[in-house]
Amino acid sequence: MRILALDTASACGSVAVGDGERLLAEILMGRQETHSRHLMQLVDRALHMAGLALHEIDGFGITVGPGSFTGLRIGLSTLKGLAAVTAKPLAAISSLEALALQCSSAEGDICSMLDARNQEVYVGRYRLADGLPRAVAPETAAAPETILAGLQETVCLFVGDGALRYRAMIEAAMGPRAAFALPFQNVIRASSVWYLSRMKFASGQAVDASDLVPKYLRRSYVKPQKTHESV
Image (cartoon, rainbow, N blue to C red):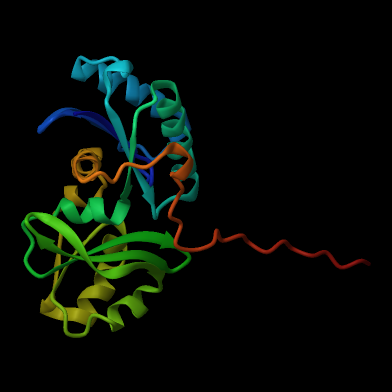
């Protein structure tokens, strides 16, 4: 099955194309720019590198969150458009699960942690089973202190930009029970989204475009407007 996979949940957008068990192409954009400026260019380039045309793709995969609210909306609207044009199925992938897959040699639990801003993180905790991450706790958004308080007896490998930002806090709270992913593993890769999409399609878990919705985990933060006193 030929699958085109996208990640726009993180600041670094990524596109991958695979055929069966072979990854044919992957592009990761390290520049933190609005995905709307480059996403379709990345899609076109990845397809060209893979030697495929859009109509030859059999299905699509995408991270549905949690992550950047704007990035998720851009990615989902783009993929819904591609699915409408090609009439091909979709796979919805958790961004936290994709991160966990990138640490597939870890022992103990894998704690995927994305920076949610406003002193909060998005967190998912997984344990490997047959090489794939299986959730052992619901995905959530909370202050890092709250998350760490619930891991008092747990050995965890932390991965993601949230783990990078709060590494000192994690080390202070958990000591030797905390391990950290290698630097290149902290960015969501579309190849992980592609691989998990293969599993979804193989197990009959495709979704319709109308059912593809973002997983925000929390409401958008809006700064309160300043009020002006009358003189």
